[in-house]
Image 1: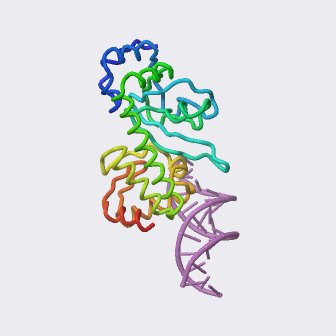
Image 2: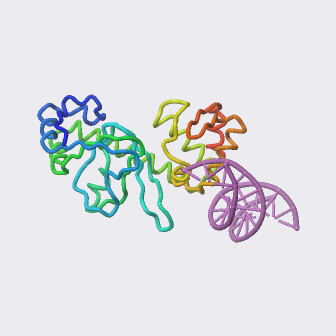
Image 3: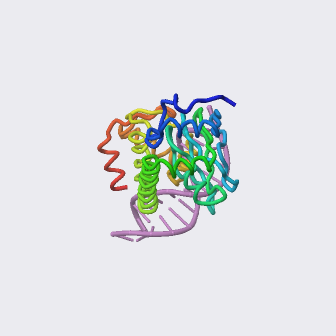
Amino acid sequence: MDKLDCSLCILKSKAAKNLHANELSLMNESCVVVNFEKGETIFKEDALSSNIIYLQEGMVKLITKGPVKKQILKIKKAPCYLGLPTTMGDKINHYSAIAIVPTKACFIDINVFKKILSINTDFSFQIIVDLCKNELEQFDRCVNLLQRQVFGRLADNLIYFSEELYKSDEFELPLNRNEFSDLVCTSRESITRMLKELSDEEIILLNGQNVKILDKNKLVNIKKNG
DNA sequence: GCATTAACCACAG
DNA sequence: CTGTGGTTAATGC
C-alpha cells in the first residue's frame, strides 16, 4: 500500500478542489491507492460495493452485461470519481469498471465520503453538478443509440473521443474493434467496414488504432443525419 | 419486386 | 485480433 498525501495530489477533480486541508487529511486516513494494468477490473458488477473510487490517472470502461450481450456504458477518464451511482444507489454494483490504459485509483471509504459530503457544501455541490451533467449525457447517448443508424452512432462516438476524452483531432483508440463495437452497439465487422469507409472518403485518417479526424464538418453531418 | 442496411458466419493473414 | 466476402433478414420505396 502506498502512503499518500491527498493534499499533494495535483490531479484534483473540480469537486476535490473545494476540499479543505482537514477534509483532505480525513480522506488520507481511509484512502488506498491502487495501480491497474490495462484490462484489470477495478470493481465488478454484482459485487458489494463500499468504496468510492477516485480516478487519479488513466481511463476506464464501464460495462454491464445486458440481456443479450455485454454493453459498454461509458468511457471515463481521470480525474473523476467512479462508482458514485453504483455505490450510493444500491448495495451491489450495477456495472463493472475495467482499466483500458494503465490507471491509478484511490479507494475511499464510503462513510468518509459521506461525511465529507455533509460538511463541505461546495464539494457536495460540485458532485451534484457532475452527476447532473452525467445524467444529461446519458440521456443524449440513449436517444442517439436508439434513433440513429450505425454511421451516426459511430460518428457520435468518434467525436466524443476527440472532443471529450482527448481534446484533440488525433488520438489512439484505447479499444479494439470488438470493444468499440460494444460501445457503438453494432457488430465488429460493421465497425471495420465503416471506419474503412470514413477513411476512404478522407473524413478520417486511419492507421490501426490511430485515428485522425480530417473533416470534422462531414463527421458532424453524419452524426446529425446518420 | 428492388435497394439498402446491417447482422451473422466463415476464413485468412 | 482484424479485414473481407458471401449470405440473409428486415425495412422502405
